[in-house]
Image (cartoon, rainbow, N blue to C red; front, top):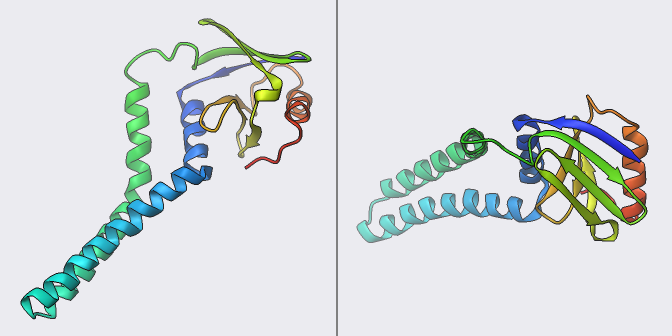
Length: 173
């Protein structure tokens, strides 16, 4: 069974965004950054309050903590995604972007691109996940084949069902 499709920079960024939103380690890292930095700012205010016997320092620490929280919460993901865009704009994404043909055999998933081909033993695939616009066939916890839901030649629903069956029907995370 085969499908073919094109992947562009936006599709690759969508995969990174999905991973960013759903990976337990990425979520832990974001929480640590968000709450750890906020606690450090408030803690500094508490420390300075006791050191200088000035309750105004506590207010300054709370304001700095709230500012850190707001800036980190609202801008961290945007900054991260813009960094990805800059990185991906530095050169061709051979093997990632461009035309892909995925073939499912009894024992392997074969990916063919203009840069070559690679095969993965089906039983080593981790899972199949999806968002509103893409399927992600995870090779391991951080690497996935990105398959857009539109513009695919071949039986995409049948192909994805067959891959899910081969993976063992593992639930998407």
